[in-house]
Image (spheres, rainbow, N blue to C red):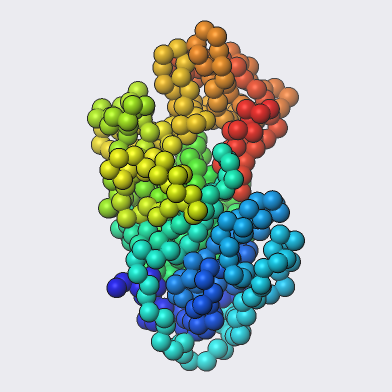
Length: 492
């Protein structure tokens, strides 16, 4: 049976670096192997997912022990934490020493992860091949590995049970698409309580036998430093890439560092085409987008050896089935910008169930094992997928047309007077719904008018996609992953 971390027993050199602290593969095997022995009978454990070396070691140890881990967002409020802990019922919480835990965790046993070695880079830690004894036997592919909670935008967060085969299949498919090897050094500053930062950003390099340098807190200075000193890949969310695009004109060292990277990846939300163009123009490098969800892990990606195409999330990954269906559930066979359908997926990358929610699990699947993503998309003739938004918040039915908010947002962001943009629909007695643009103007003292923006969108897309109303904000509401919270906009 293929182990999740084959490199733990073979790879040499640095595996993890967080700031001034690092672990070689030998040291990681020893630290995680020792903790795994202690967790064998723990049942299910919570992981206080701070951006720390201890969080990474705790995740690896739980996976080695075959104990499902529940990553907890340190920024969650007490009500959300109480719900997650009550729903998942962990026996203890793993945390870095000295971390202050909120009152919601007061009744849960605590285990501080003690890495009993000098973890400074270059410290003398003994022979490089000193490792733990025999690591635990690899659990079955269907065994639960992680229980990751959704953001809870439509109700209490649901626990998504991810089996080991979902993690291995996704990471191996990405290795194929991105030509990801043990020679790659990944840099990122993503949170470790979710799929992007933890599974792709920590487990991904460890499965390949490469290394990861975590910034702790994202900064363009940190990106420059790490890419200029040997890192080959950068992962980020659109907010991070937007900050990079904004900084590039005045930061030649950042531009040089990005130009030397092998792969720049954006995910968790759509990266505006305008930011794609600014980064490529300044560095000569294209940002690759991929698409996935907590329940599906990764579904599609632009390939490293393929054609870069801003505005698409690429093609289905190896082993992943993808189809677009209309409102009646019939598969769409026509490609093109007007053939908008819901993405449905099946394959080894899928979750097992929503914890303690059999009805929600059953409702999430269509006949034939197709998972209903709730995301709307169109396909180019060659199969590249373009996400146009969420079915619940981004599909606007106006004047008999189905309109995706995403393409209008990209059009708005191409206007020089727009810094940020979001698009929603609202009831209209004549059209059914009308397009509403929420704008953060580049110059708050002289924002572009509704007529100006409507003309701009109509000239680049189609007249029926122009905004009928424009609302101005100082900032768009976003969650921890940089996604715009459109329900909050509608409440305003």
